[in-house]
Image (cartoon, rainbow, N blue to C red; front, side, top):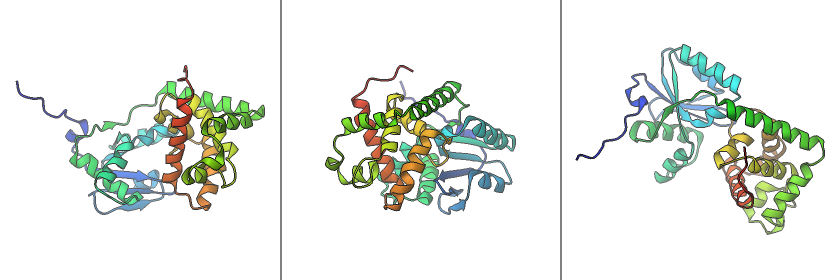
Length: 262
């Protein structure tokens, strides 16, 4: 019996021209041909320039948007004849690494274009908002607000530090991200510990903390970005290192805790 061929992808039958998109905290980079890259201030600015329908491919961080905001944008672009296709962000890093491509937003846009146009990676239309996840995220933020108001944030940070160990014994990268060079950042550790306890996977952990430039603004995201990363960036910490160290902290904390019940 003949071996089964590759599974057809919806995007392969989509005749619309391709636009590959990558965004960071400050801007959006787009390539239509995999070579030249245009820079926009926002996804909205990019969409406003399209005069004919496109198939737009991006990492699945679109899924971390605020539900109403995401619904509005997606409905508008689909009404204009566009479609958004997504895939998991880990594949961008893997593809960039396998081709020894330097890390940059422009190169990530080129990598996304290459992934879609020359591989069989599963790429799927952006799914509708998951009401269950939306409720879990909002419930978690309400609970974190309650703990903060009750003065319990320091206890969360202390529990995280007890698992991660003395700050002075961390390696250089971990110290640069998780503290100020002298001690842990209580706000960051509290948020990371809280999110770890309420996440079933690293993907959920990253979504709950909003570790994407386009992510839903929330109290937990504010702890990570406003109260921690903006200071780390002034000390020369790159976002790629910051995010990597939060993933490492998640792995260590998760190993010390049971999976959440819901």
